[in-house]
Length: 131
Image 1 (tube, rainbow, N blue to C red):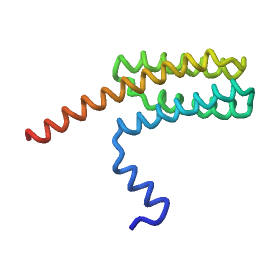
Image 2 (cartoon, rainbow, N blue to C red; image 1 turned 45 degrees about the vertical axis):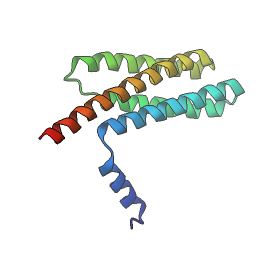
Image 3 (spheres, helix red, strand yellow; image 1 turned 90 degrees about the horizontal axis):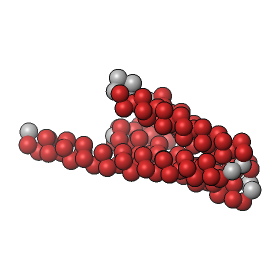
C-alpha cells in the first residue's frame, strides 16, 4: 500500500504516458481559462488574474516542451504564443472575448491531440500484438 505523497506521485508518473500528460495540460488550461471567463462575467478580478495566470503558465510549459526538430512545432509555438497573447489581453482589458477565443483554440487542440493519441495508441497496440 502506497502511503507517502511522494510514492503516490512516483507511481502515477510511471503510469502516465506523454500523451496523457499533454492532455492533462490542456485540461488544466481549459479549466483555468473557463474559470477566468467566469471571473470576468462576475467582475471578480482576483479570480480572473489567478485563473488566467495559471492558464498562461500552462501555455508556457507547452511551448517549452515542444520538440523543435519538427516543422509543425514552429506552427504550434506561434499558435501557443497567440493564445497567450489572448489571455493577457483578456486579463489586462478585463474583456472575456479574447479569453473565449483562446478557449476555443485550446479545446480544438485538446480534441486533436486526444484523437492523435487514440490513433497512435491503437497502432502501438497492434504492433505489440502482432509482434
